[in-house]
Image (tube, rainbow, N blue to C red):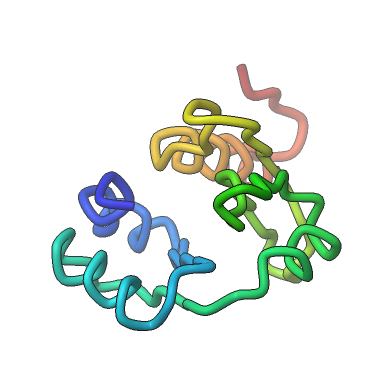
Length: 117
């Protein structure tokens, strides 16, 4: 989450809003926000089983948590890219998001008849 905070100015310049959500209690989520100096919205108190059913996120039943799941949404709020982790690696990084959006923008703004590389 701190990585997204570092990239936030660049992401905002591309028109990207960052939102996070957690199964943590409000108290624990607020501690994370304060510790990492996050300025973007962080939801809390999600029902891990409900979110897993809705999104396909992987569950760790023993700790009643979701493994990291990331979505990059299109302007119409449909999913453009999704990542699903089953452990401590495999996240959608802010660099990934920036690169994907820049590529999409380049394709949509390329003059007719010209191809982008």
